[in-house]
Length: 224
Image 1 (cartoon, rainbow, N blue to C red):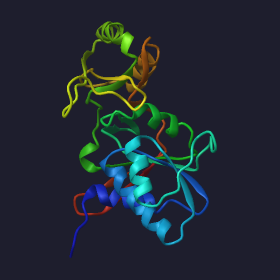
Image 2 (cartoon, rainbow, N blue to C red):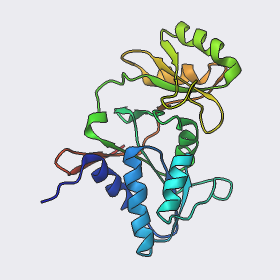
Image 3 (tube, rainbow, N blue to C red):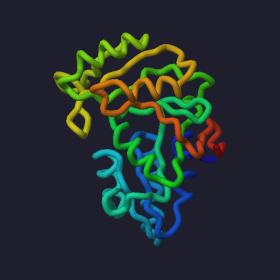
């Protein structure tokens, strides 16, 4: 028996939620990539949907898999959004490992139903991974001071296969703010949203359901 991996199990389960004539948000990341590929197979089999990508990566993958694309200008309210997470606890998510969290949050807040797909390693009782920030370049030093005032440590994310910093699809810097264990993510969400120079941060507080892929290939669906 061939056992599918947890990310594939979660992504394919989410893809099964799409119905004819839906407009679907297409998230960014390795788990969501399985959902996009599975949606592409369903489109080949006759499913009629349109996708709104959250990054160039998602747009390229959707096009490769035959999913017709549209925009929020044409469809300002989506039926479904499928996206991954860097970490999740109590239906609150940290995202932005792929530097796409600004558009991911715009899409997530434009949908009737926001579905997060993860493998079980991303689930925790308390959020603790660094919070990605998209930052306007002239505000880099100001944002650093504001994060320190909030009790965090902050670093400019540097490119791996390029010299210099990681640049978002929107042309901004990506910075990572480490607050250790985040006892009150809703409070931190509010504080980060008030920081001048931060375009968007990676705490997502409005999750409708979570699909968790398990090591044995099974899934668990949690409705909020």
